[in-house]
Length: 380
Image (cartoon, rainbow, N blue to C red; front, top):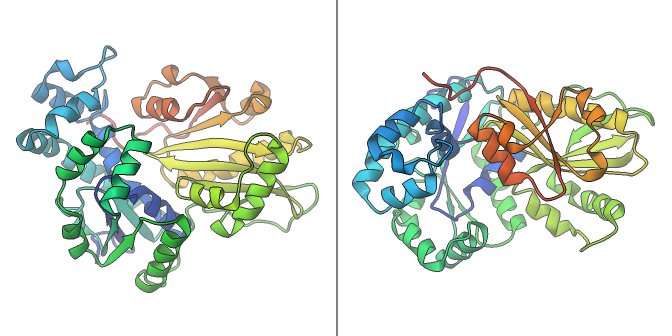
């Protein structure tokens, strides 16, 4: 039994480059509330957060950027090369991560929660979980992912992998081992099979807890959560609207389900819009919106935003960031729903700025709305 009454908590771990986040998002698609404990660790040392001063006092001001933020890459070169320095950092950050995780799990409306943490077994988090799941990937696949997705050299990738315990140790401690070295569909089958076998049959709310949906009419926009089985119709809509560039395939969309959720917008039975949406580090990000040119935006966008924000608030999100293509960058459309045009540098909170800088693509416009005033990792 986990320490959280009424919750079934999955502790998800695995070494760097194994694809833990992909498996966490799959569990979210199945109805779990997902927590990235490692992202909480980053937030705990952000400027204004409770771990900031202690980290700077411990390692020195040379780790700071000109803006006064902690340069995690610079700090990482120190701690990952020195076990004693890493232990010092973890002694500061881990208690704060545990506090934040406890608060979020306690406030989650979902009955199943998955906590992703690379140091799950080395911390007290594992003891608080009902079941431990480990993600395994062959070392050669780890190296390829780290080089392609994180821009590491092969030498750096091997050094980071060597600094971690062997994957077999985490596999031995796990109730479930997910082999994530092949296709998205293969991993999805393993995750959904393990969910059916090991997660208790308790009532769960999907990650997007949509309210009662009325019967579709030809004039009302209905927003619903896309599932991997909808990959074909999502790809068809994107290709019909975009018309140029490389066609999107069903397999492309299936792979994207490892990074985000899709929100489907319909009028009657017709799919007229789709949005890629994800929650990371308590920040909601709508990373892409594709709509039919003839779609009534004054009806479609408010309906989409209402349901997206409803889900985001249920997931304890602090802010919503929407990244629009040029044809949707109409301030009046967004202002009516409380959004304003912003640049990443004006967002104020480092976690929000990082999310915006990481996501914003050339040609996109950022629209921002703060969803709540209190923050999980606020200064103590």
